[in-house]
Length: 498
Image 1 (cartoon, one colour):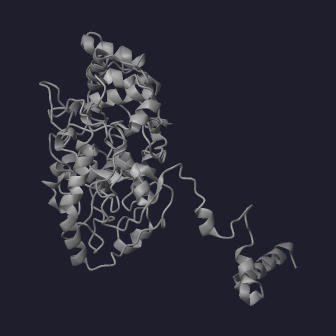
Image 2 (tube, helix red, strand yellow):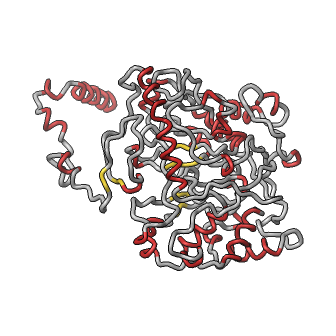
Image 3 (cartoon, helix red, strand yellow):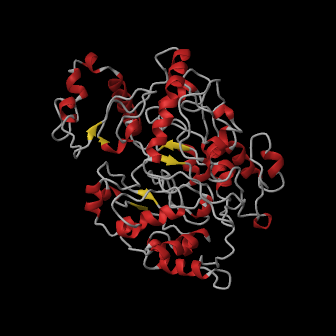
């Protein structure tokens, strides 16, 4: 008998042996399951879990769907709770669920608004001539309220981090989801007025439209810069995408765009009773949040942690200029656009939901096509910038030029946002913001490009910086750059020129 036949016979015998259950082979089942214990393997996993060091934070409370946010901010909680997996069944009749959520919505919305008004002045202030790309007035800040007991923001920024932490008045603590237990997408009023199918009966959007991007936003293509905004103020939908882009993009890009505007059922937006819309919903598309390849300001919870209360609130980021980014997603460090399309968090990172409520069943070629269209979405024009991202002195104002010098020098912005790389270092950074408040560390967040930043309020990953002035103030405090009031004004003017 040949050596190959002998080896093949032995392999078949081995597989047959392994196919027999341990008990049938006379083996001890407990021993079989524990055949590879690790060093110090705990005998009692529940006791082991109780040893978690929360660093003074409060353990997370139970939070079944529909539970209003706790009375204290969620960044004061930490650790683990429950299971990583969600349940696709409500456990109560839909009529009862809907009635209960509608009854508490007013108090849920009021609590969310108080979280904002305690820290921010939500008065909409604008300035003549200061607009986004399609002429919506930009919000002018700062919106943050100056903490009591200090005469100016410059005086406040001069305080040591430990002193600010002791005072307990740092304005830019993390923003929570208005209904963190249920989470998922919440759309602003400017969207739901046009798309009432996405109006939730359990919670409303908390930030006023004044502080959000214009709707619908323009779309610029790297392949047709001569056209400027190719949408001319029209929202791209499944009903019009083909006529709008036929003869403009390739068949592969057209297929990617089709998928980007196709609604898919998701957690809480679907046809089952596991939903927060009055009527069964077709779901949402990528362009429901990233409308026209930009953003309408809709919020979600980042899908990269559990329990729900540990997840960070995130704004829908713009898709503009993704071709210039090597790192996508706020915390997960995804490295390709097709991969991002493949793992988009329609199920809050819970693939167990897919079988229960339907949804996306995309194959790799399809997500590649989505990435192909994504990769030609351009930044808005910046006529004052030269090819290397520097201001053209013949076009820029004196204020903007002073702001550029601060950006490159004293303000330390260019350390993470280099001009020649579309104002991103394609890295991830931890600002250690918890130096200024008692709470759970936020960890690393990707560096977002600053090109076209005037079109993307509010700022930071969760929108806690409502205006560019707030962004300048925040980083002045966090980085300890000690900018004067006029320097901060110059820097904000420069950012608007990007």
